[in-house]
Length: 308
Image (tube, rainbow, N blue to C red; front, top):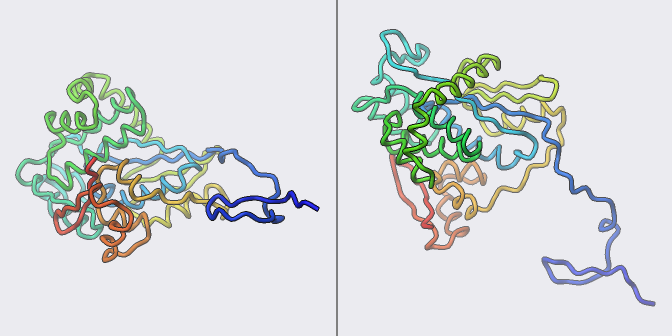
């Protein structure tokens, strides 16, 4: 008698009898995105730069559970005689340099900071307005990519992102029309869009950066303020979804992640793949072909770029 309950395993190529576990109803529907996450931030927020490794992994693995919206908070309109950030002892641009270096050393997301002594950022509004124009003209994903490039330029490579020429170069490197976008950002529409974000920040009750607010359909949720470990964001999502049964996606391959991000610091790879700092180079050699990446060092930290 012929047994028709046979199958061939796609991975092993071995054929055999189908087990009971192979028969059943499956659901191809994606989970409904009933959760909205607001990320209140600013291009010159050092603690926001510090949480990039944790936030990236959270979005990569759990992003199918929520809609993610980045909101500009307006950290620095301009310098004045009073305190800008009294909690961190910041009254003038040069006070920022030491604070930034400390954040960089603690987080291992490199921050130079010397430009705040030599050629300080005068306002975070210009790069924020550019973010809003890109968000309006393109989409949230491209705007978030721009935000990353702006922070790389500022924190690691010591470029003044309040200057038009620097912003134009950043946007051009993304394959967009930097001059047109930066010029539009300086028109009334740029500040109008930014003011809408400021109003939203007020409604959300966010008073510092970074602030992550996870909200369900009933407008109830969880607020996470400041830099936190990866597990804090996962626990917050569980709370707002009222479940312990979250199914994270597998981390993307390092090759696909580097191709998408263009540049990754060692700390970002460690957090994404749960590996120790001394094991990063051997992990990269195993995951990437020799000619597909370059390893460089800045401020005592390694970073990796794609050669494509």
